[in-house]
Length: 155
Image 1 (cartoon, helix red, strand yellow):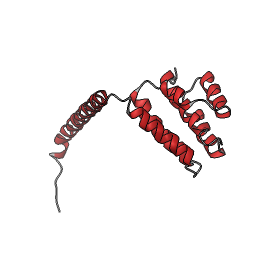
Image 2 (cartoon, one colour; image 1 turned 90 degrees about the vertical axis):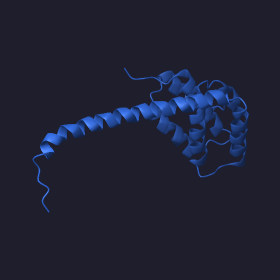
Image 3 (cartoon, one colour; image 1 turned 60 degrees about the horizontal axis):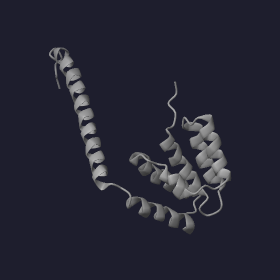
Image 4 (cartoon, one colour; image 1 turned 90 degrees about the horizontal axis):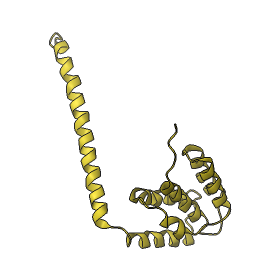
């Protein structure tokens, strides 16, 4: 079964689409940008329909953004938003103003302690993953020692 996009992540995308309307013009490049993700992200049919409707009818960016409850999705919103507003080669002043407003208003809502804990947990998980990979590599190399015993290193 294909994994579906969570409600939180879906609202991240709705917010990106809402941002496309900030300058009152949704360019073909912005439409293509969104359409690419509609074709490659496992949205439900209903989610795709909503996002396509959002492309035609502007939604309130603040309302959409408030529905993004996961810190990771909020962080990714800013990455996708930056890509989307630059995709048409025109970082319109209104888009920039809205983007900065969102960034500033959302930073005041961020629980820095929770963000630091999340970062520490991510680093810890990454260290554990690397340790497992290192151990697997050591085991593979150990298995080669009997073969290497018979190899002569002649110049």
